[in-house]
Length: 305
Image (cartoon, rainbow, N blue to C red; front, side, top):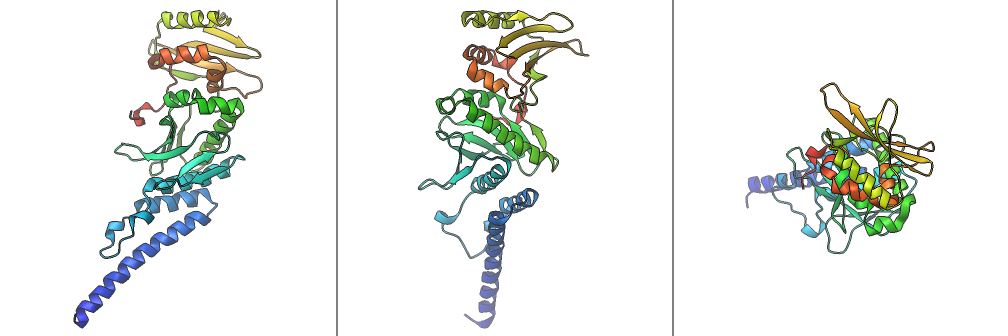
């Protein structure tokens, strides 16, 4: 090998090592930073890193982690900053992506998977039942709850065993994370999890059949819960659970249609619609049976089944 070729070899090797050195600096910065906007910038740079730019150097697969791993690490840091309840990151044996363990749900584990969307983004999924919690799009600053699958998750054994307190803590965790994201101009949509915002929760469909509401009257009566027709300026139905009232309210809107909403009246503001799904099995049964109509309106377009 003559001098010219040796220099070329050395030059390419240096370029490759410099490339991976940049990644090392980013990963180190990710582990050290406590500043969320800075963390998100670092995460985006890690996700954009292309190892194929390296011409000569390759890293053994056992030590190369996919993008979902780094998304998990970043989310755990944000989650810890937002909540008083710890978040634990675990890398199971022979796996390439870390799992999240939220202390309030000791019998549930979560992981991030890539969303099959042209826009990219990631789903946070409960692993045992493969149920989505939310969609996180770092590049386009979007953070959305999957109301359909989160309602199912609330009914699973792991969540039921943890109880209402655990559900309350987890909802507050997600709400606190969303509050941090709001400060950096994220688009947020987490219908129903914030106990401070339990009115005007829109249903998916307008102009619902009265038969759907009547079926809730029947299911409630079987469990000794009496629904009453609302009187006065608003129309709909109301059910009282102790000091809490759940109202299914109709609103006449400008296009001539009728929009139905859920309104939870709770002076203490610590009850959510997902709390009621746990407390009132007949309510969840009705909700599930008529999901395409009475399901909570969310950013359905990003949730691909």
